[in-house]
Length: 161
Image 1: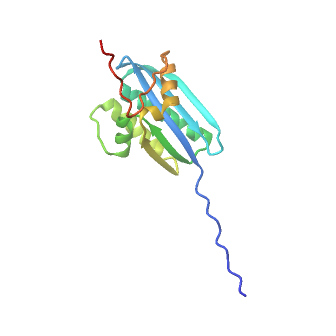
Image 2 (image 1 turned 135 degrees about the horizontal axis):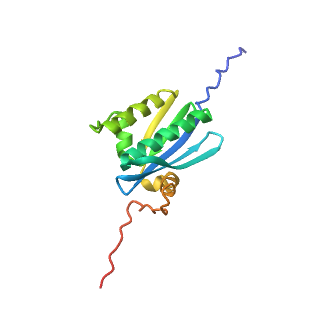
Image 3 (image 1 turned 90 degrees about the horizontal axis):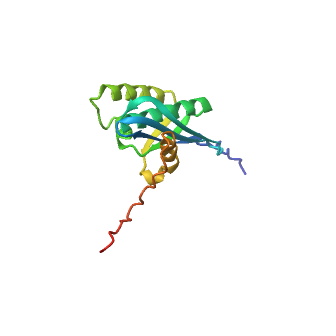
């Protein structure tokens, strides 16, 4: 009987989960940033802050993502799954869309540079109802109450007179 070598087990890299959201009140107006970082061992860090100055909701989304990436780097994350409900941020950072707004171009370039500092980073769009904690944190930064997200497939019925 001959012994066979058992191949070494290859473990996938430990992925960190990151959710981000930004709010502008009014739009354009004050900017609220929210982020949730969850490590592979369940460690969690929430972030909620008002950004200096004023801007639009797209700027708030990008600033929230930038701050979330800073938190991930400080926590030692190397592999990230980033989730946000901003179609603008996700499509522009993936290179699927281009903006002509100079202020947003600068933010997008800065975030791409931050993303390059990680071994891997996967950016995913999620509907708002799947991003409740980051949404709550971004609104709380502006002193706004939670805004419940509608679930898909649920239609509000009008009351009949």
